[in-house]
Image (cartoon, rainbow, N blue to C red; front, side, top):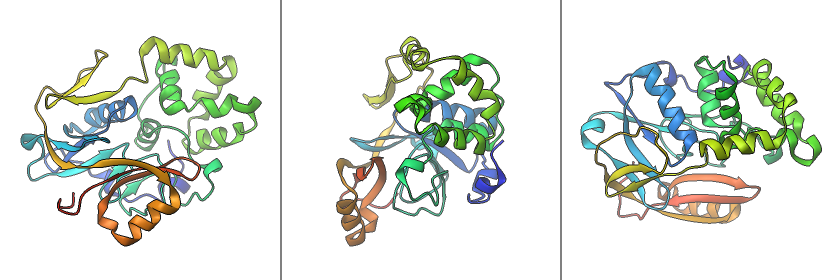
Length: 262
């Protein structure tokens, strides 16, 4: 269970999710997919939207009409989102462990899935699932990189998430190869895409069998923090997603002014 000192920083909308009022917006990887699966299990929500970074926001009308979106593993500038990325844009509705973290080297470096499982005290006990949790978004890497020089950062976040008793034994008993073999075996780095208006993945994960329509076209860019800040100051509404993927290196999605806000 996530520590109260962290949970108290979050907005409270996550306590009242309703399938009659909300739908999920998934992004293109296993972190978002498995996070959505947990939320579907807990709240009976549907994946009504899909955000593809090089094309935009896709929606299924039947699943989204008169409902509010819950973005999952998306550093969205506006709206309710479960997110693990670091960004200078302050979204008051974001549930993100990196709220208030100023140093890139100290940021939460785990997955949105781990955040959601901890927040809702979702039961994960067997070694295979815990290993997958450490593999997604490479949460294991910091424990081993540079001979463990930054191991304390990982351990700090394991403790904040109340998961140290489950995760540390697996990390201590294995090495990086154990996790990299797990990633390869289960194709954990597989991507999800929109193909012919339907969700597609090369693995056999079950995806919604419905059609989606592009509702908000975007373009994706990569640049430094200062340039993104300058664009945001000039036109805040044009930035849809923004994330510091490396120190002082931002990936962001931008819409044209002719399109309405999300």
